[in-house]
Image (cartoon, rainbow, N blue to C red; front, side, top):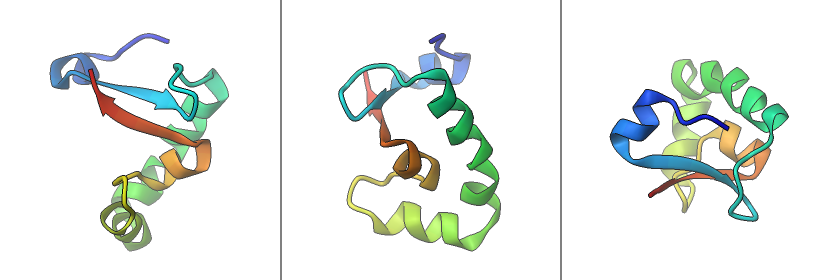
Length: 68
């Protein structure tokens, strides 16, 4: 998939559990969950309490953000 400007600027990328680029449906799910991650308290709690600092959307799609 295409890297967006923010990811290129921060030199990060999203990978699935097999270290490949996530599929389109996983990307859509990650972004649908953004509202929960950033507006509601449970999203913040999950982000700061799990070992890999993954958001709820990342956990649901088995993906992670890594540095390039």
